[in-house]
Image 1 (cartoon, one colour):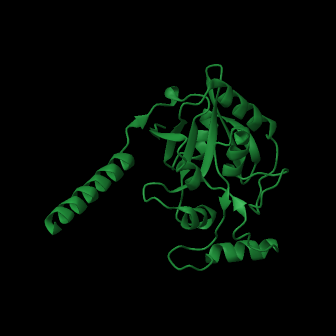
Image 2: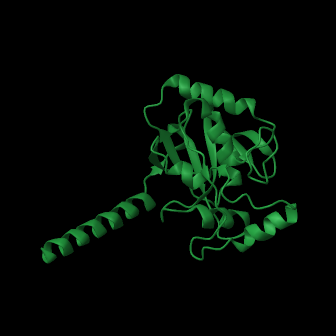
Image 3: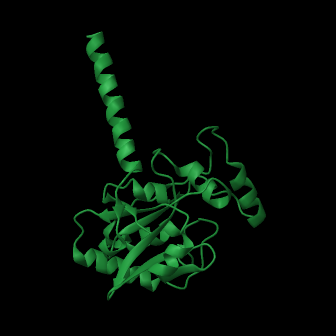
Amino acid sequence: MKRMNSLLRKIISLFLVLLSFTLLNAQDFPLEDLKSGDLVFISSKDEMLSGAINRVTQVREHENYDHVALVSLEGIDVHFLHATFKKGSVQQKAEDFLQNYKERRITVYRLRNAQPEIIEDGILEAKKMLGKPYNTTYVLSDSSYYCSDYIERAFRKYKLFDLEPMTFKDPKTGKTDEFWESYYEKQGVPIPEGELGCNPNGLARSQVLRFMGELKH
C-alpha cells in the first residue's frame, strides 16, 4: 500500500510539472486568430503597483497577471477595451495596445460556450463605460473602474465572473503588503481589506474561460 501511495504521489507530481511546462511554453497565438469577446491578460512586473497586485492575488505559479483587456473586432481591425491607470477606460487599436505592453507576456483566454449575444452585449456594455477615470481606491464605484472591475461589469448581466472579498495581505507573511500600506496612506483612505472586488488573476481562474495561448507580438 505504501509503495502504491508513493507511486501515485510521483505520478501526480509529474503530471503537475508537465502541466506547468505546457502552460509556460504555450504555442504562440496569432493576432489574427483573436475573436471578439476574447480576454487578454498582461503578465505582471516584480515592482511598484504591478508587483503589489500580483503579490496579494497570485494563486497559481503560471498565472501572474496585473491587467486584463477585452477584444473587439472592428471590421478587419483588432481593438482592445480596457481600464488603464493613466487614461481610464479606453479603446485602443492593436498596434497601440501592443506597443504599450511590448515587453510583457500577453496571454489569451476565450469564453467557453458563450452565445454571440453574450459577447455582443459585453462589448456594448464595455463601450458604454469608455471615458471613465481609473478607480485608484479599488472600492467598487459606478463612476470609475479598474481593469478587472471593468471586465466584470461588462458581463455582469450574465454573472460570468464572481466578486470576492479583496485582500491586500502578502500570503507569505500574513501582513498587509508594505506597498499597499503606503499607497492608501497617500490617498488618505483606509485599506479596503475584505470588501468585494476582483483582480486579473482571479478572472483568469474562472471556469468560464479557456486558456488559448500566448499572443504573438
